Length: 250
Image 1: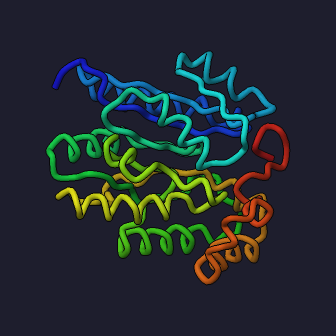
Image 2 (image 1 turned 180 degrees about the vertical axis):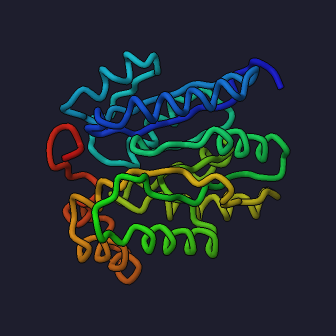
């Protein structure tokens, strides 16, 4: 272990002023725990109209601007600017537990793991009668069974990411599924393991459970499983882009 820059944490952010500071602070605590291994945090401002870039600058992280509002494009823009040997992609509304960052990096440093992700849970700010446990448990079952990383937390070796061409910019959502499939192929070919970690789930915001009806939530989950081409429609994928107000939270 040394002070050479080894990890880059990339956070795509569109109108995330309400949650971004906490996400950055928790990641920084996790990176401090990795010392003397050096790292960087990059926030990709995906054409925000709120205080997202100002908050990132105030937090002392690198800020990259991506003018085209597309999650996969924002992630790729951050990766192009990254200097680390290992890449971590974290959503701006997600808290990464300190042990998870260390465990992920340790597995890659061991030489056995090429890429992976983590199970997830929602935060405690839940609407009454929500289906949070079902949604989280359903995704975690899919994630562990098929080894699919959630977009809220993905890690991989730089050479793997560059070899597969990064996130698909043909889709406006579900880009983590296509990336997971490509990374698994790369891992098999290169002698690595693709691993979904479950000891320290990431904590992601439950805000969409407030913003959208149960019918719409289940619709955007199930329909792409039957008709994956709908993910190429930004109109269909507005679920992942729309905000009730400029702050990104009601």
